[in-house]
Amino acid sequence: MGIKNVTLSLPHIIGGEGNLGVLPIRLSIKERKLLRKSAEVIKAKIDEFEMKG
Image (cartoon, rainbow, N blue to C red; front, top):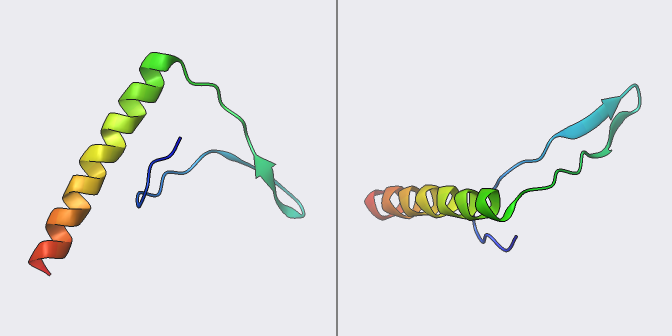
C-alpha cells in the first residue's frame, strides 16, 4: 500500500514448520483509506516522539 516508515502486520499462517505465509486479505476502497489514515496518525506520533527524544 505504500505506507512508508510505519510497520503494519498481516495475519500469518503458522504450522508445525513455522511461518507458512501471509494470509491474504482484501480491503475495500473505504478500508484502504481508513488504513492509510491510521498509518498517518501512527507516523505523526512516531515523528513527534522522535523530536522529543
